[in-house]
Structures are given as C-alpha cells and as structure tokens.
Amino acid sequence: MKKLLASFCTLLFTGILFAYPADVIPIPNREYVPALHQALQSAEKSIKVFMFSARYYPQYKNDANSLIINDLTSAALRGVNVEVILDASNWNRSNTLDNKQFADSLKKCGVKVYFDPPDVTSHDKLIIVDGKITIVGSTNWSYYALERNNEASVLIYSEEVANYFTKYFEKVKELSTERMPEWFLE
Image (cartoon, rainbow, N blue to C red; front, side):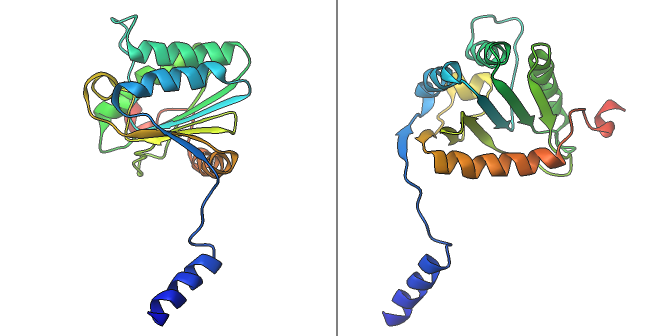
C-alpha cells in the first residue's frame, strides 16, 4: 500500500497527473452538429480545426456538411481567423482526395487550410474556438459520422484545455503545408 501511495504521489508531483478546470458537455450522435454550429457561429477571434476526414457534397446544399462549411466560411468572412489542418496520408489517397475537395471549398472564402505530413496519419477530430471552447471526440465530418453513426464527442469550456490543444495544433501546423503533397499531384 505504501508503495502504491508513493507512486501516486510521484505522479502527482511530477506533473504527469493533473486536472484542468472545465465544464464538459457530452455531445454524442445528433447532438454534435447543433453544438458545433452554435460554437462556430459564436466565434469572434479564431477557429482552429484539425480533422482526419472532412467531406463536401456539392449535390446536397442543406446537409450537415454544408452547414459546417457555411459556418467556417461565414466566420472567415466576418474577420475570424479560421485555420484547418486536414489529413493527407500517403496510404489513404481516397480520404486525401475527399479532404482536398473540402479544402478547396474553404479556400475560396479565405479559410487557411493545411495538410499534415503524408507519412503521418492525423486521426484528430478537434475544434478550438476563441481559445475557450474545445470540441474533441470521434466525430469526423462525413455524412455517416454526422447523420448515421454512433459517435462520442464532448464540448469543453476551458481556457486551459483550449490553450493546451492550441499549442498542439500549432506544433502540427509547423510541419504541415498549404499545398497538397507532391506524391498526390503525380
């Protein structure tokens, strides 16, 4: 017992075990899009998105994906700094192509879009709004994830959590590029 307590105290005092003050709201399944929509519409300064799979379906103008694109582009047009990092894995050309289509629709409206290094799979589903709100979970931005799948995500009100993930976002962005990887263009 003493050994277990000593190990716990070591973890606690070395900073490995810590907690951030936060208000956490579960947003599973069909609760995700309304919560995301509200967060994106309320953005005043910045929106940072890090997404594995993001889709644009031009044939559907009133679907959840169009709502997300409209929210991101509207935010950029009203002066919010909107930055998006998408996966561009060299092993998954199909996902990369779909992400490029999504990126192209955003770039037309002034959204900054980056692609992660192709030798790394970025499986993130992360949104940070105004350095205060973080949305993280399993939800990709595809029809099935937004409309059909069981997905588990949370919305977190915490500047500390947002700051932590902003640093993470910026670190990955430094390694990313605004162009599609050369291997994809061949």
